[in-house]
Length: 79
Image (cartoon, rainbow, N blue to C red; front, side, top):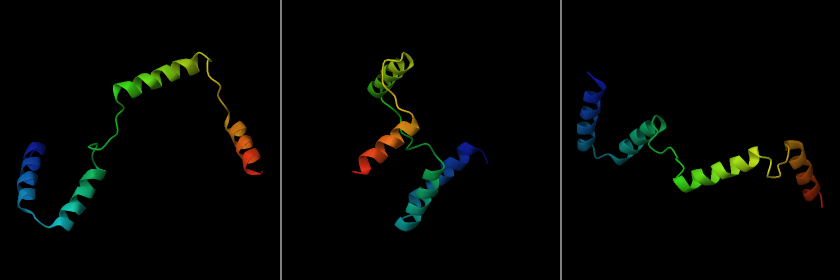
């Protein structure tokens, strides 16, 4: 049986099933093996990230090392 045939047969079988808990369990299994809910950035978000990356690469933004951030956190939380 081909992948396309399997998908068609599954679709037919699912139409006949009314057991909600079974369908939810099946959905969980399928959802963990698919990219149906993969997050994608929209064009505005991509543009913002590209601008920020360019500024970073050009040295136009202040960055902090992990140790600098750790020091700042410790300093601010010890008050």
